[in-house]
Image (cartoon, rainbow, N blue to C red):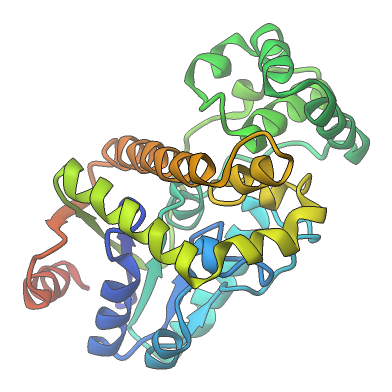
Length: 301
């Protein structure tokens, strides 16, 4: 096995994009994005999609290749990413996977549990219940149908709660009963690089990034997306807070402060998820590129 997938992970705003590009240039290879917020072509500023200069420096896959109206699951991403990697490894010994979405990174590196096909009307009904009754109503349903998963899931993540409910309702079995955590062997070597910093630095970088996004036009971008606010893809930090502002629930300054707060919380959850993975080698965000390159070469096959 002489094919190597370099996986770059870490909290939001830590510098994964720039490191991924630097490594892709060094190893003469291409990048697959595993950031679930960057799949959608209608969302740019609020998802920190690589800019034109960055995209020109290294070829990226799975960036703004879907519409917010598309049904695109983590299972769909797993299949697409593996097909892309199969193609890339025909010509190259390396590829880079960059992302802060732990579930999507795991889909490529470990494989997903398989779930039964569920009637789409169940998800539609749950979406309507969320719109009309709120996330707390769905949380209580999940507590009854799958108390085990209720204890471990991020209860504020509407998409995860709805997914667990639709499987539990559609199959008649708890969602957690389908979670086997069986790692599937991939036909390539996996080298996981984690980038981090002191928590204060991470939080300061997040606050600065949000200010930059606002200056770049985040509010106007959110206004264009506001008519579609009930779509799953838009139930994400950076947009839902501004939708609350447009609904006249919050003033603008408070909405922006909520974006910063919720992004910091998201970063904390990212680190909690990734730190469970003992295969990750952690580096400080200021570490020299050559230090990381040397580590990758030592781990390569």
